[in-house]
Image (tube, rainbow, N blue to C red; front, side, top):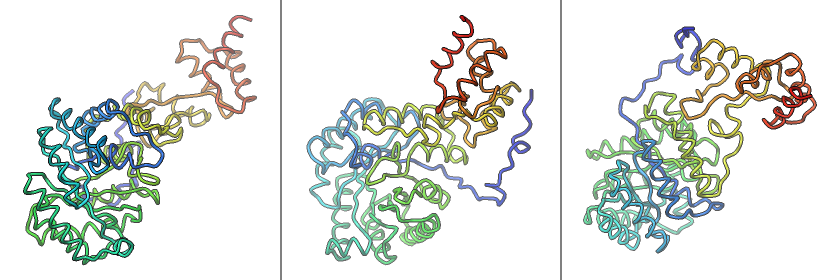
Length: 412
């Protein structure tokens, strides 16, 4: 059966008011192996696991990654060096960078690692910028500008690309932001990062701040890229990152599973899903389940069963009405239809599939589908027996439980 055009099957209220889509491609920076590992509840994976995750980042078309924090010690430096060498040896497209404080003692090891690996590693030099942080640390703006100038100048002298990062930008005063970014750019920084370090921002705040920073960059007359780095303390990280994309940033940072400080960062997986659905990216994302599985295993963080798109229950249903709609769509002979009739996210785009289960809210169509999909001919008696078992159960029937009913009826 020929499926009607999508506009006739789905009325898209998301785009009733025309949205001006950006024309420039968006770049993604993966912070899983640095900011992600700052979560207080994770395991620092062995190098072999980090390398597996690196290869999956490359497979997913992620453009940049944070290799780690050299200032964390000798073990961190060794892992960073091996990861950088892995990129070189495999001629990967992904661009490496490292988070470093705006102090020479952090920058010197990065220079040595870059030289040993044979690849420029961007220095993500970071410094706090909000009044509350400045007050708590007993800093003053003149000191911060001096540290900025020294750090960026040192990196440029040693031929390291510079990403200048202001922590807590979303709570920083306009004048401090202007002076810090202007100084960094004048000293040679070619990328600056706006940070929602404590997950404070709302989408409106994100767009206002980015607009202000874009004007700062414009006044310098330099070609400088702007990044967005968001945390999820208010659970606004994905929508804030999408707002940043729409506001025109060049790159967005995120972590697999959203792991990171406190409750974590923008989840890379969900960000990719939304960018794909909104048409901002085109790459194949069917490897995302494997990316999440590897990260989950490596850091010891389980994937919640109700996690959007990738959780166990994301595309499962045992509710009779829902299942019936999916089943009817499948009987029309088109997986495209079945993948969307009761799902706002097409499972197949992200390496998943719709699943029909049998439970206490199920109808005959659930049992029929389960049997037919496993090559068992449904009979009225068999379907009734399965539903009888389901209606007297407090959970979705497992395959083993249904098979036991099938065997009982086939071999009385």
